[in-house]
Length: 615
Image 1 (cartoon, rainbow, N blue to C red):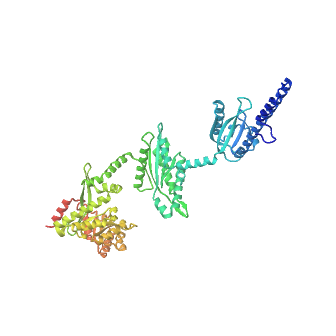
Image 2: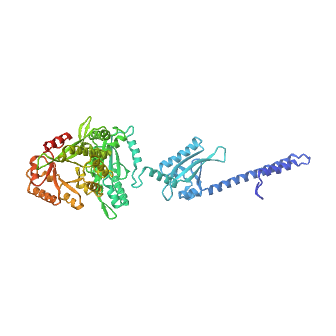
Image 3: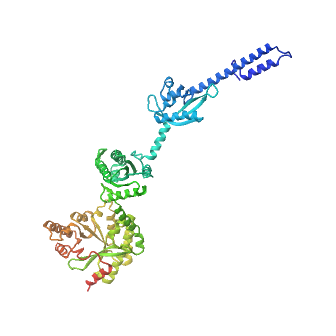
């Protein structure tokens, strides 16, 4: 129904004239009167149609003007003829400055303008109902903004006519948020570098089908970063990592290097092109030099050293896993070589390492299968040459394929695989069993057994109980066991080795300290160590391989005198000849081991040595 006093609607017009024409009271109307009536009908109908059209236009204008999204009306060529307030505000324009612009000209870049042109063309050519896209639109005064646009057609006045209309919704905040989330997914939040996931994707793409030339992969690891992090705090540690990232990006970024932070203090660089090892090494050395320059943070000048593993090879030579493994191995070698340096991957050394690692992986099975045996290094009394004072017990691996392997060939691998404790326990049990047998057979002539425990076993909380159980089981006195250690273990900040040895000393075990000079000797009174024997080692012994100079003789004399003051018995290791042994004896050394006696002996050979001096 129309508003009161408004123009009648079509229904009212029809009803009115239907009533008029039906109320003729049975009288036929003349043609001219009927014509007048019909003219009146037509006039009323036209008035009603015009009123409806004006009402529709007013509704469209109200909707167009109040719409919260931007709207631009264009002619059939795509030139804007009218823009609403929302669009003007969004793009920073006045309505008159937008009129006459082609819709495509609103794009901030050629790519965005092309996207808008494509939309206009598709509306026209393929009769698309609407075209939607996210584009970057130019702003009159500020930076371009991201917007979600919809292009559609509005019908024209004549049949078949259509005009493009552009609807624009602000998507700047949403787009920036999405970009931020996307960035966080592929970048490290602390340094801003690519993260491990992004690096892996980049590596796979670099080695993809059709790739050519060479690829270089560099793994870098900050040396001793835990010292910085724990000593100066995590906040300073984070600043150091950001500084490292910045320096690496500065060096390698200029050479199209893709730099990433993989984890903690580990970084990686990927390069591709016509590369040579020397060129890559030059860049790595430059980066390591830059990292060594102090960074001043919170008043601290912090110098950072790093180790680097480098692989340079043809792109087609293997997949991502092979390349990453090679870089890790090279980095590991650099750290083993002393850190603060680089190492280039060497395939031959890698083959040797694989063989070593295979060896380390089967230690547990070898121990279970009885492939290990005891080997002894005899220590003889110098006053009665050949008479045993003690034997140092060690392990030998009787490998079914490689033959006899000394401990230095497999103990480092045991450290890596966690087998030092099982090996150490076996060594302790078997050597005490041998000592019990010698004591039962030779009485007081039987030598003490001396064992250098692996550090992991020396700090094991079950060690004391294990030793006591073995001594009780074999009915041995504690003094039958000698435990050897050195100065570095004594001054361990955590003191775990010292604590264990002190408790074992309370059980009666004799502690033996290897010393290289006066400083090591003074650890005994400083830490109140219950040490009974010291073993001279290193240069102080080597100096007596020939005629010693006066300084070496004075040094040894001073050491022996100080040891006597501390009521210690003095021995020596690494003695090569009988003459060297005689010179050491003249200065007060009581016992020695080394090449002049024999570097190793089996259990049966120890039996023979004992028997020779019991008759």
